[in-house]
Structures are given as C-alpha cells and as structure tokens.
Amino acid sequence: MDLSIIIILIIVGLLAGVFSGMFGVGGGVIMVPLMIFALGYTQHEAQGTSLAVLAVPVTFLAAYTYHKTGENPINFKYALIIASCFVLGGYFGTKIAISINETLLRKVFSILLVLVAIKMFFSK
Image (cartoon, rainbow, N blue to C red):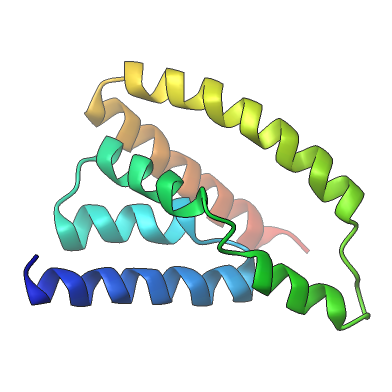
C-alpha cells in the first residue's frame, strides 16, 4: 500500500472521528465524500467502506464521554431501540443502494446532504 494512501486513510479516519465527536456525524457525511474525492472510490465502494468502519463500535468512547458528563446523559434504552432498527434499516437500505445506478445514487446522496444542510441552517 502506497504511503500517500495510508496518509489519506489516516486523515479520513481522524476527520470522521473528530466530526463524529463534535457533531454526531462521520460515516456518510464525512467519510463517503472524502473517499470519493481523495481516493477515487465509487459511491458504492465509499458507502460500503464507511459501513465496514462503523461495524466496529468506533463511537462507543465518544458516546460514553457525552454520557459521563452528567449534564445530558444518554438514554441507552432509546439508543438500543434505535440501533436495533438501524441494523434492520441498514440491511434493506443496502439492498436498495446496490440495485441503484452509481450516478443516480450519488445524486440522491448529494440532494440529501443539501436538504439536511438547508433545514439545519434555517431552523431555530
């Protein structure tokens, strides 16, 4: 593996971790675009790799840090319900994504990011 690729992978991981800890995002919002633009991955390759990274409980320490502050403790019961449904939704979402043309998938992904950004920017 080329050293420049390793450096890019390290940067992608660090940025995803920092943004995950700061904003609760990382996979789709940070890693997917970076892998597409910096590594030349296809949309499918980037999404699959992002999912593979998140398969390991990489955010546990960040979530625990939020929880132990005590100011706004995490409701782990709610998180477990969401996580269980996330697994099921992830399975069906993947089935849909791999059946969609690469160009269409990238456009839908881009529109989703723009819509979320606009909604968050203009909300109170």
